[in-house]
Length: 192
Image (cartoon, rainbow, N blue to C red):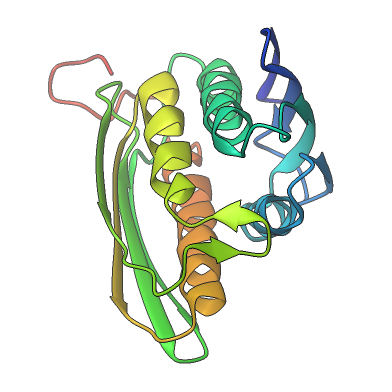
C-alpha cells in the first residue's frame, strides 16, 4: 500500500494527515472549516484515497494559516505515498461538471512543481472559507508534492458548484495519474 503520514506542528497550526493512495475513498476530516472539510471529503471519495486529516489552527486570526498549512501537509503526505514514481501513469486530464459549472484539471506527477489556477469567484467566502484561499491551498500542495497542476474553470455561476467541480476533477486526475500501470518510469530521461 502506498501511504503517507505527516505531522506538522507550528505556532499557528497542529496538523496530522494520513493518506492511502490505494484506498477506497474513506475520509475522516476535521479542519475547523466546514466547507474545506466538505471539499476534502469529496476529494477522498472521488479519488478513492483514504484520507484522514486533523487540524487545529488559529482560526481566530483567519483561515489563511490553516488552509496553506493543510496544503503543505497534504502535499508532503502525497509525495511520501507516491514514492519513487516508478510505473505510475503520470499524466491525467479530467473534466467534471457540477450543475452549470464545468472544470478540468490536467496534471503531471513530474517531480516539477508548477501551478496554473484559472478560477474566478463572485463571492469572498463560501461558508467560512475565503475563496482566495483555494489557490493558496493548491499552490502549497503543488510545491510540496512536486507535481505540475493546471486547474481551469471553463464556466459556471454558483461559487459552490465551481469549486466542487474543481475538487472532483482534481481528485479524479490525481487518482488516474498516480495509478501504477507498468514497471517502467514514464519519462524519456529514465527518472521522475
